[in-house]
Image 1: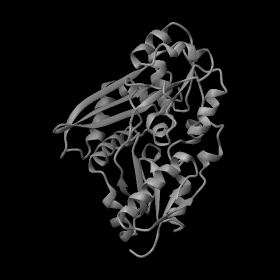
Image 2: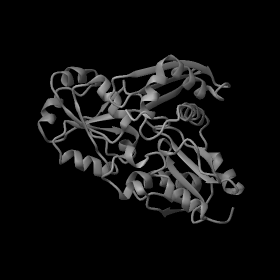
Image 3: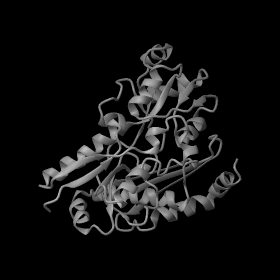
Image 4: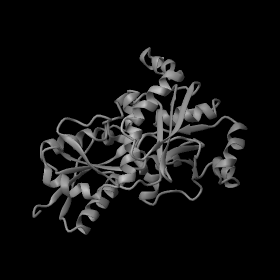
Amino acid sequence: MDNIIRIGTRESELAVWQATLVKELLEDAGVKAALVFIKSEGDTDLVTPLYEMGVQGIFTRSLDIALLDQRIDIAVHSMKDVPTQLPAGIVQAAVLKRGNHKDLFVPHPVTKADELFSRSLKEKDLPEIFESAVHTIATSSIRRKAQWLHRYPQHQLDNLRGNVNTRLKKLSDSNWSGAIFAAAGLERIKLRPTNAIELDWMLPAPAQGAIMIVCRATDEPVFNIVSTLNHEETSACTYIEKDFLRALMGGCSTPISALAQYDKKDIYFRGSLLSPDGKQKIEIEKYVAKDAVTSFGARMAQELLENGGKEIAASFKDGK
């Protein structure tokens, strides 16, 4: 292919890092590529909570429009931000090898919280610290809020918006005890604090840590080139997670979590659904053969609903 592949990206440091990675992978394969910067609604409105904006699609819509308008040839997304149903005319071309899927607790860097956490840098020590007092924790994710409140119901959760750099600055300027971030985002741009604590008990958003590349459905030459970057293991696992999310009709205001991981000959899946206040929680876990992933996520969603999830899902429809 003689033409340069135009890679659409948001302007945040993390988005540019992801798009640059794709550019380098293409160039390593002998394909010329260039970055094209596109602003998104999620980058310009840093006040409204994501769950009020319609988080799924808020960071991808502008890139989708640019792609359909043929201003770019491919778009690079954090896969967890991509709606379960892609816009007509756009297809998934590749999913890159997954990064760290976990969430991180980042303590406040300078206030009394620093003294509090200086003696405890391991996840196992958090319950003792958090159960001893009321803390204020920041996150914009309703999934993280629900899981945190399920574990620490006495805590206060505040909204935290902006790109990674902005959120770290807001944390530093606040009186919060700490904030929750995606590990992959901080690690990719080398901003993970040394005292950050991985929350092994917190189940991630579907496809968290994965990078997705999309192109126009009619652009077969570009699809054929980009598809060579696909990581099959990550693609299979994120397919299950997104299928689970889609079947639960999960959106911006639904605390749905899912994680599928290769385990020798099979894939091990865990999923959960919580009420926003964290008081109700339904979980499911099961193994599936690697060659039987089709519709597995949807079946897990149905099983979860039949075993208590319907009551939680009904509460969203009732506006509770």
